[in-house]
Length: 310
Image (cartoon, rainbow, N blue to C red; front, top):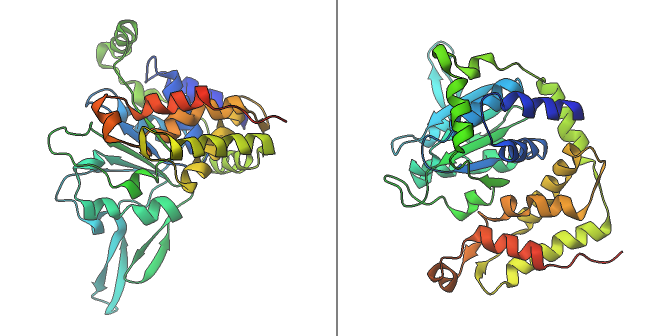
């Protein structure tokens, strides 16, 4: 199974040029059973990344382009009257897929955004007092334009905390942009040439193997020490929640899994900490005035927090 992770990365690199680390982070989040938030300007490949993962991993894929008029029932589903049986019948919503792409999520109303909370946390939706399980695995990849862009609003803190990681694609280098153009010569579309590397059963097996990775007490104490630093840092008004602690541990296991180890070391935690924590931290007014970012603080915490001794 571990060999398949490398094959997935190589296959997606056919479409996404020069973003190897981002691809690995998204795959690690899938292995950890987490959700991904992509925040960046339009046109840098956020949607293409999500579609590439769905096709390469053999996942049932669904997408909603969020706008202010999208309703919660469009996401979770609704009950309607069956004229033949005269009973209420449940009609599934758009979220019933293995990989659900919430495109431009921060353009939706707060009520519609909240329709995803139960699905992301518990893998189910409740409509008219009845609960319906979502398919497994269930992964949300949400995209959003930067805060302050036209027609956007901030995602609520409760929803931000449900994303395992936040990443930014960024602009490609000149060489990578040339490579992108060469891959699309003569009307070619690299997305149509992607080959499925694994099945849904393979993904579930990889997720199970990842969850069973061994973590020493020393590493667990290091994770908690990092989290405690976020709660006491003078530039942060709010630090990481216990949910963030669980997400960091799961991502560290996934990083170790993809590094071909069956145990977690402190370096695994260091590598994933900024992506796991940057969107969960709330800056103080002083930090905002000094234009310090949460990513900067997350990296500083990693550098200055001592690893507990054996």
